Image (cartoon, rainbow, N blue to C red; front, side):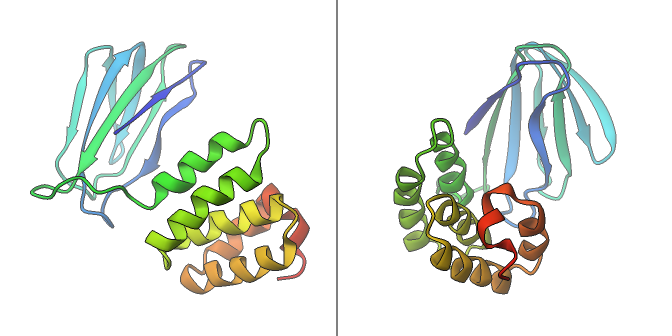
Length: 171
């Protein structure tokens, strides 16, 4: 379960994605404001109070705020299974340590994530980013190489990721 609030109209409140890899169904509730959803290319205007249920995990979903202050609650899970946190929740949570920047605090979360999800490309990639931000460049480079082994697209991500400026040219 997550809630996203947009400061301005046009801000993203649901990133473009599917839940196909996890097999999750999702429900989105527009708590305030108004959102514009794109669902497999179809547009849905969703004022406050709208509930959007996506049974098919393969549905591509994306939403932007149509008004400032739009808040969308997202609830998802695999039918018939108890809730279990996804790997991305750790690296998403670590983002709170960007302002003010505290890479060591973020690394404590990433250490936990790596214990639980040692082969998750997103966890490994995020760990490389935080290591680089902490000035631990050799470890960052080694971890980034592991992320690329797990997910070759990580090389493309690294090419433009400001977190990895200190190691990018050593790949």
